[in-house]
Length: 114
Length: 114
Image 1 (cartoon, rainbow over the protein chains, first blue to last red):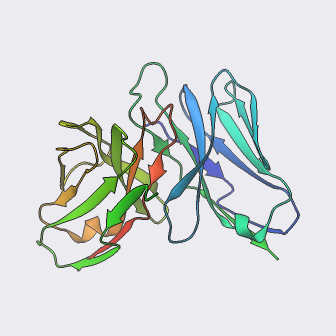
Image 2: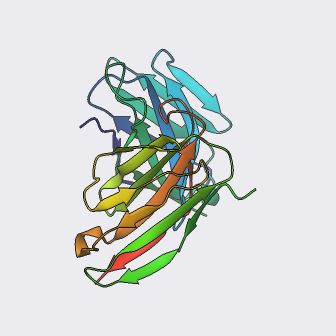
């Protein structure tokens, strides 16, 4: 089934550094989303990028999408300890599939050390 | 502003027991869904609903039942619990299809089947 896969599985950085996470998927999509999950909590939506967009910004977040490579990246600039969380990409099934099903990757665990 | 509320937060069951996981949202969202999250597996869609009276299966529906009698509530029923159903269960809602709209997640129910 359609699935995004995040890379790396885990990332440890120092406060103030930038963090980059990648997501690859298998078939065409309409939209791709990124979510954050703090330990013991539910997922929180970060950003949605459409297939006709190449880059999107939200605060310290920058998301890129390369549909030719079927990949996306999430960049967090000037990281803070509070950014410590797992990050997931979520993809839909594209124009030929259901608008009602999202597929989540396995996530990247980001640790930001003070 | 409660958002998505899941109860209980923790539950331990014996094999063969049945139970209902509750999910309620106060945002008047039409779309609601249930996921399970297992270590190393990401989130997998169990069932979803596009409105009151309408439900459909996700990726891993076996062993689970759902119904949607009101816009606000979307309970998940385990008919005869099995150890393989030990997981963290998340309920989510959105104002439209999840491909186009941010999903709002509850904080999960941690379920152990002995």
